[in-house]
Image (cartoon, rainbow, N blue to C red; front, side):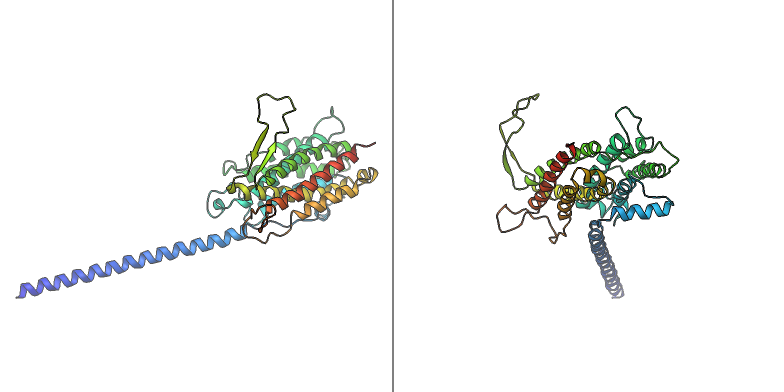
Length: 348
């Protein structure tokens, strides 16, 4: 009888231990689940904050503040160079910093802002090349500026390098080289640093801008799918091509193209405002100042607030809007105004 009671008691204790272990395990699982949920909520909120696009700035005001800090006067080319530096620095000073090379959440999950960054970076690279190749040289046989020869390749570094070295560190070296050029440019005793605000120099850069915007406009318009005639048929080329082609952006890439165009337009807006300051005399002489301001007006339209949480891709005349077509409209008008501006600058 005693042995039976012992066995019963032992069984009860085992059941109690099993139940306690089960409850503890269940509690641990609940804790882990809640921990994951809280982490995902925090990641989502941080991701929303990091997905904010930076505001535009006044290049003339930025140049005046920088000149005051340096203790120098604002000379020709100072505003444009300062604007290029500010645009570049915005890549890592905006909310979340530079996201294109992130390898951890929430940055690795975000794609809109990295595409925005790439659009900005393309314009930074194009303008740094123009600054090195055209704006800082009096003629084709003149020597290139030593600081700009460093800045341009630094700004062309791989945009997705995470470490050893990181993209940001290389871009910061490029900005440091631009700062060195700016110091020499504003020094009246340093004749080797120059900025030539000539119509032909401006036309050359505008031609590069025109080709960039033309490509973006076509990619944005392809969001709805189009059957296009091949306009290269009449041009000598290497391999045969079809007379017609169907061009349509995959639905997974529509927001990527949109934000790349948005970043490109943002960077161009700041640079065009700076160009208005440094090239004002040339623009007035060519009766082209209004043309530049029209370009700025169209680029400002591309930066209107986006009230939808996603990029909508409605048909052209359907019930829902197509954000890509709206963006393409602004960019196409800006591109047409750039063409007119280049024509005015080419006149004697």
